Image (cartoon, rainbow, N blue to C red):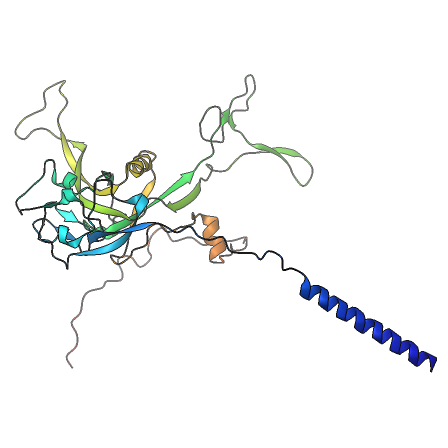
Length: 341
């Protein structure tokens, strides 16, 4: 009987404590809840932009323009339009207004024959922008499918080299020991399995580290064409070079692409060209409205890790392509006609 009373008392105490804890937690003020940091609202203004590529002597109608929100802190410094009635009936006086470009007063005129001062390409530039030409080859120009009015991203790649901080020359350094026969490329001391110290030298030139990245994005192609570079030396037609006189050079054509960029991006392009980066262009969709897109720099390590490429094991043998094709001259192919059915 006594044990039963003890158990009953213990049960009542437990129930009382549970009730007190429940009341405490119910009356306890709630702590500050974690709230997401509000994204600052971008102030915009609806301005008129080209709905399609507009060319010289086109008369503006409501089908050629559209209203689009534009960040107030990025409004065109040369002026813009907000009312459709201000542009309908005007004439395009520049060679090209790319799709999505804000209409500026300098681009339009009251009559189709009005032409502003300066070159055609300068009249096509948005106020505050610059035209900059970069050399380009077939692959870098998307197989020359790009046309004026397209928007592209500029891709660049380099091989990074290690430099001596004092000499600003590439490593490894060369050294010469005076009074001893120890000239050569600087190596490092290692121990053989038997404990004998040896000097280890690199078997080949140091391999540079490759990296590629997207730089300037969403820029307008203003023109494609050729520029002249003197490469071969020839004489004037019908003339022989005079002794001591350098013969004139025959210019060779090289390809170039003209981009519309900000003044700061023009300096970036200049640096990429003069620092000998490998430059390619990536064509954007004409319907893409996104501005800059974040990308990660790509190196050999990035590709191996992202795609799970595992280096093959070290083997005591290898394979190489034959120096000459063993079937060369023995196999011939020719086009054949389709057999009659």
